[in-house]
Length: 464
Image (cartoon, rainbow, N blue to C red):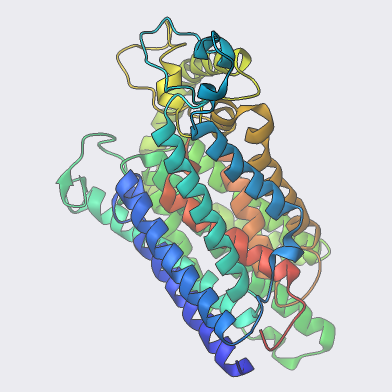
């Protein structure tokens, strides 16, 4: 395959990935098994066509699995463990040993255990495996298209446009279309912007990712000016008109984020943007002039957004203590789950079935607790402390590597910093909610992480 042909293939693949990212939020954030299967089918077919095309031309991946060692091995290990959880391995146990004894699961809640499987809901575990593999394939595809700077810039700019569009739609649905969800009456979170998501917190995470990318692209203009000064470029004083487009996009995203009335979502977004600002200042060697530019701009945007759209959020801050008490009671019972079965877990995706065994007052029995409202606890409850820590380790390691390289100049700076900010958003909001478990958010997060990783690993190969 000629280099120009492979470059064209990667350009096409980048656009396909962006279409997937743009469409995934429409069906309620793709938070249903049917849409998990549809996304898995689409991404799987795209991956097969891409690999077949490369293999037919005897061309290798630009970033192969060998360069991802040992992260790829750990990722595969989690997939293998999900398979082991779903299989009826208890049938292989010595005769006379009850499944509940072998797996150390309480059976007093009247819930039938799957015959011999580690997972209390093997079907849910197979679905989690499907989502896990989908994310892995998507990440590998993004790595291939992210080897060139122009494709990374394209993807980041289009992501800004996608999130800003959903922000505008969310505001319009709330303020102009009678507070509806895809033209349907809402059944939850009335009075809050939810866009195409059911849960306002999930929409807030999606918007926060967009805010981080937009701030990164704005910061990139400062960095480019600084690099122009270092090389004596006479064009360094010219302001790129795209800056004003970023400012408008950021204003729409921040307004929608505040209109969600999601307390932790707004905080996570603020932490993600703050991390971008700090990394920018680190790249600019903490020059005071550049630093002071952020302060009035941030105050103006935040003040205007709060005044126009943030009154509900401000009012909800007064009930923070009560909400925290409810969550803490829930977390105590989830920790009880983990302590009862710390190594094996209850099965990927099986939190709802397992929590019934431990649910008691003061956690309300009138609500369906199908999520742990803390992604870290959910991973440890479902996969066990060992396997459940692997995803956290993989993302944390990637974030450290990205942030470590943020002071280095080059065309990959925006990709590395945007990915770092996205990790900060995800890590923060996952402390108090399950937004990253919503597939539309997962897809956007994987794309941003892939773009950042590709920028870090790329060696300025102009022919990739």
